[in-house]
Image 1 (cartoon, helix red, strand yellow):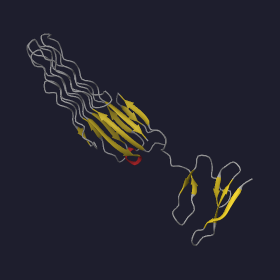
Image 2: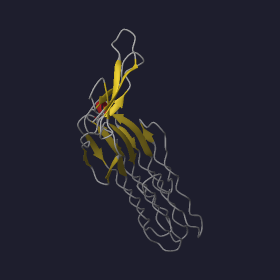
Image 3: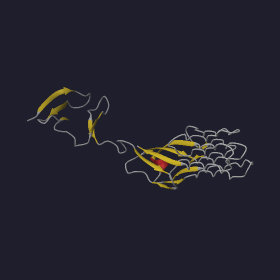
Image 4: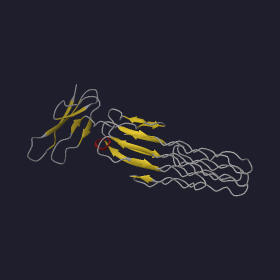
Length: 237
């Protein structure tokens, strides 16, 4: 059994429309037009009745891919928009000399950007920057740590290459820079270790990747701490 509401809505220049309710509670337009499972109701403007349509792909909850080593990103089927974070490697700390505390390394820069499916293409090439090595033990001489490597995300479509720069090595542990980021998240500067002070490495900006190597107390005559490797994080929608 169904109930039909006829002549309920009239559209200029068109025949009178009707809304029909089925015995199960479904409703249709212009007769028993109930759509199919999964369809949604779409407005077609003031002069047209609404219609049932299949939603565009790419909806639903976002998915996540995390890369801690170089490789290739392949979009998940049905996903059309992408938010990418690209974090460079952290710089290594200076050595722990017999006179000075170690100088912390700078953290890697974090570049982020939105890409659509045209910009992304069918895949993207990923390079993960390694953390810089700590300065080697050298008595009373301060030996700077090495800079971290750059991380890059290079989409195969029309989009630009995203780069998170590596952090500087202590004792000049400046934070890493970014290229083509929609927000310039420069890495944190490492702290200096004076006398017996501890020189902390620059903290990671996101996801724990690319932190600077930590300096330590003096009089240990040991090599500095290495910086953390970078990473790439991709949210798909």
